[in-house]
Length: 207
Image 1 (cartoon, rainbow, N blue to C red):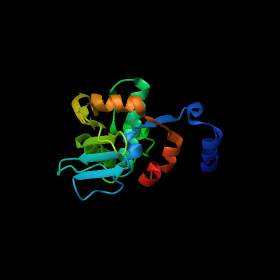
Image 2 (image 1 turned 90 degrees about the horizontal axis):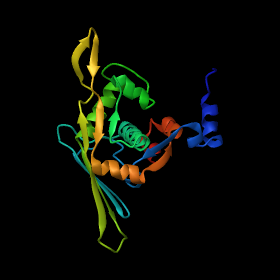
Image 3 (image 1 turned 30 degrees about the vertical axis):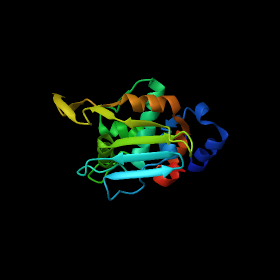
Image 4 (image 1 turned 135 degrees about the horizontal axis):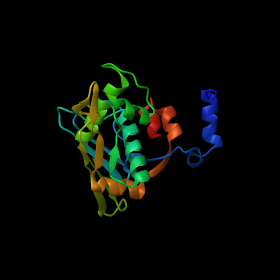
């Protein structure tokens, strides 16, 4: 098959819808109304307000908050998998590079490589505590409240050596029940092809 040029790929976004193209994904509604930090926060606390919607994040000082494109790609992929499988348990893959490929990223090794930076943002994501609040309207005090709890079994750490030069991996994330129910009940559809083209800019992903 001949390679598809960027212009042809972009044309397909307009000519073929995401469902037909097999590129239908989902993003948590709370992260559409209120977005994650674009740059590395100076504080371990973060709050963003958009009308009736409030997002709050807190993380241990030694870890820090997630920021940039990678957490957005991770959360959209986790949400898409949760909606697709109807299960709060998400398999990350046999190796870190497997997860990198699932997110449509290049597998560049080394301390500045993709897998290393992705693992760093995943660590931040798994250690944060995220909560959101939506008021019924601008004049009433009633609200809906929930929190994200990303429970996980083995964060991309190799288990015992089973075969020579081939570590066994136990890599899965179990979404907290409140977050799982929220994203499967009200996830916002997205076109994964568009996200792939915009992956270098967190602001563009948000927009």
